[in-house]
Image (tube, rainbow, N blue to C red; front, side, top):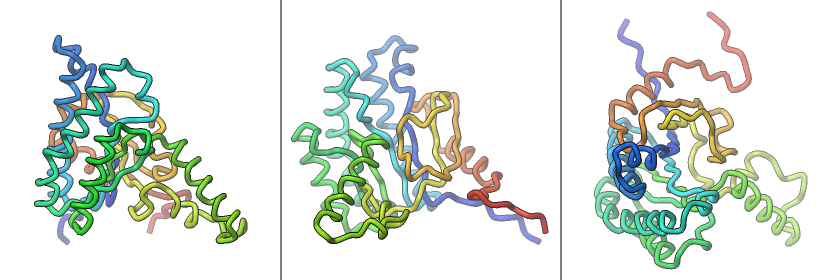
Length: 241
């Protein structure tokens, strides 16, 4: 018999943590850590596509990140906008479709325009989905979905008894991607930080001490290897033959 094939997750989500700490430990401004984190995101995207991962979700800016100092928030907004402009050609060249999760209407207008432009430019791409989570929080996503469902009920388009997991999932920011299989968190913390609470219901969690700016392709391989060793029971039992 041949070697057993390694299981590859369809959807990998990443909490890109540790940028600020990475910079501080090197005597740099925190903004330099975020810039280094952008390069790590590019490496991750290339590695994920090379490993036939169908979708990735990157936690770029949370609804709670507004509480950070104003200059850092401004720098993050500009960095995301610049990254979209610079990386758009590569996304198109590699067939990556950009989707956006979050309350985008509260973002600066230039960033909103950059997000819309990148979505439109990549809409026909089919190789991989990049779900960029900007001004995103898992709790507010669930609230926004509940509000959307309530409006449909008020309009007579939906009945209360019609609501189930499938219907609710259809009202999330990006409903057409599979549930998260693997959630990766660099930086060593062991919490999900309000990230994709609905979608990670049965995700495998992988924490690593390395900060996000230092993330390499082999780190993704180690995470996938650990993922492939786990038994995913989804609330049931795995019985021995």
